[in-house]
Image 1 (cartoon, rainbow, N blue to C red):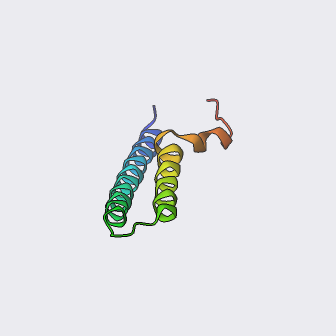
Image 2: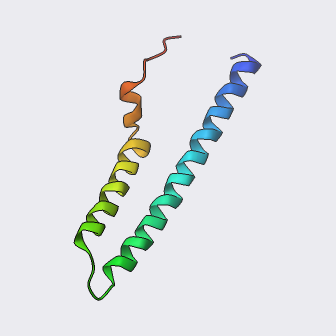
Length: 76
């Protein structure tokens, strides 16, 4: 691997890790909001479902790599 290719690959890994941590933090915040809503005296089931769907979408899209399904493959 050339030095330029190695730098590009390393930058890609760093970007992927950063995105992963940002999504993880977002999931933590959504979970805390979900917990707070669920502990209200009259919790909204609709709001809990919406939060759950957002969390599921983040997990499927980022951690299960669904976005790769619509990406054209590079053969090298």
